[in-house]
Image 1 (cartoon, helix red, strand yellow):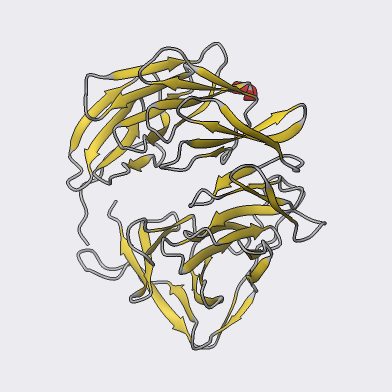
Image 2: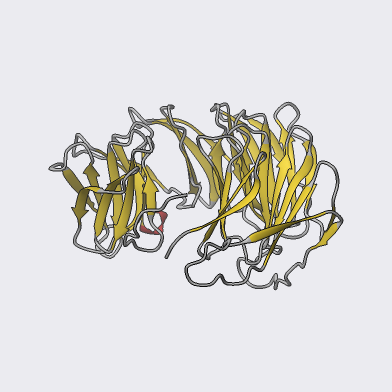
Length: 401
């Protein structure tokens, strides 16, 4: 594998465009647009303060960045380097910004969950949505759809508002039976909308697109609740990762658990299961081409050390924090956060564990390829990028520094 030279960027902020033709990077107050193949810079934009939270518009024509020090949202065009704009939110404060599905409106969160302001790129008259909940997954956006779901809290009660992203009128508003709603997400086909509760209460509710409740699911009453939620690409399965270290698959016919994946401390090898363990490799001599990492395949069993967690502290490292289907829906990858060095890959059709990979360090991020089914990349904070495919198994690529 060949590598380019290194380029400066801030805090790992590297963003590929939707068409994969460009890469956007941030360095202090500059946004640099590079060609994705050659990494040669093609455009550069400068702001007055440090930038973060870049986001490409869905059509890849525009890019936004937030300057939180000045409460300003910047927006630029990659097709016209002379075009640019900014939104000044100093009166209400800036908490974040997103693109609308049509790529022609900015959705800007104010501080203290006061309002969500919709700024059109072609007009100066904004629209407003009152009392939004500024959550990591508080907006239900679906590419190709004109409908947007917004998590809101009015009169101390959680609600979901569904809005037309063309006229910005409210089409529907319905209550959600959550104590403190933690997130919402459309199914890929746009037929269902899921909402889940705070970690203190196990509650998952699924609604139809017109707001009719289809199910209210709770796996247990005592203890922490939901930590991660993911739809399958076909919208027929809903995976719920919980603080009890299990993943439950709900089917879209009965909305009841089809199967439960567990993360035991001892896993025994089987004909359908491959267990990888990363082993230490001596540092190669200067000028040699030694392997950056090495795996051994276990033929017996693997005992996993579960880290002790203080449940009284906020955001405990406990439970399934990573849960994601690959683009084909054939595989599901999970990480149990109190077993941070292990990555679990499940065969969804056969409802069984296919791969268990134990790393030398904690797994920071794992992502499926958006263009190639069954290709998984993950990193552990070092110089290596790890890859898994059904054909090649686990591999390691060292990134030069």
